[in-house]
Length: 115
Length: 112
Image 1 (cartoon, each protein chain N blue to C red):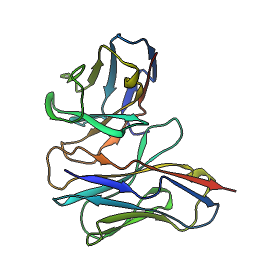
Image 2: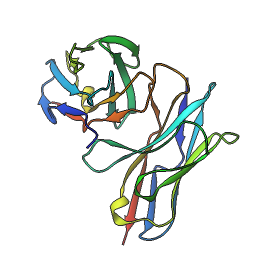
Image 3: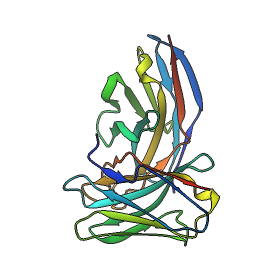
């Protein structure tokens, strides 16, 4: 089975500052990695995903993440945040090559951007 | 908009009752997943269907059941409801089993 740890439950940051949301995973098999964002009172929106290839992946809204296999991490970064980035962010994994595809989620990181 | 629709958006009911949550996947998606989001447990996988057949089960209680119909929409049935079943229930879909999942807006269930 897989597990995901999001190291920070809350990250406050000022507008236009850079941010990093940390995610570590544990798995006995190779994985696919995802970041989802949940705005208040809304569903989960796919931000970006790592399936294979380049370990640096770019997503929507200026976010990017880097897969580090040796450190089993998939940290999310943005060089300059906006008020509108305030939301909860979830890191998730699934088994590579599995035909089942269930996602294992972290507990989420609440990003709050202050003016 | 992910293309996944869920109804109803909100549901308030009493303990002991039964409710049905409905999900329509994105056009062309064969696989449907159900997840529960609660403050206690976070986001938990419940069950997956692929082209009408159950594929995988997660932390789904025996009081809960689901099915996927020939038109590929899915329903999650929750019975003998308890206060602790209050949560946000998400449906997700993917083209094939094991591929990227797209989530619906969720159904917020409140059991009083």
